[in-house]
Length: 212
Image (cartoon, rainbow, N blue to C red; front, side, top):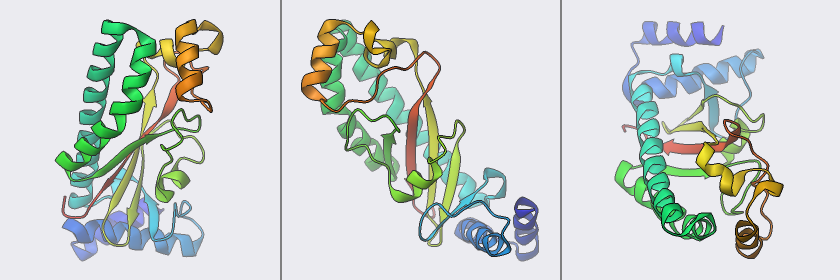
């Protein structure tokens, strides 16, 4: 029903651009009052579906995925090089030191806010913003989107464990001793082990400003 209402709203009002994203929020709010909408992720935000985004919202959604791809490529290139040079234990330190820099550089280049999170954190600093935390409460395995009343778009995109990541994120009993030692010293509260190849590891979250 809400998707049909949103599309009808766009057709009737001719909304596009930033107003198209705001229209999605208006529709979501109306649906909340009617009791049919998905719950609001956080104050000032409403969950929306990709099909209900206007042209600007679709552009924001594409920008979020582009930023995710860029951060993922640079992070994996950096970690893979260190893995090959010195092994997985050394890659843990590089990930600790470089991941936040890569996120900041990606954010600056793409004009977004971006990060990674999980329900099983390694780095306790990787908590998501409130709008993303609510979207992720059910541990979704598909992308989710939220729109704010001021035109921002929030996107969460799942991360699945690749085979090369097992050396640091696989079952604890399979980790090398130097990896276990590195985790114990650098991340004493680590919870990010026990995964299998292809399993949901966590999510990228991206917040895209209006008119992006």
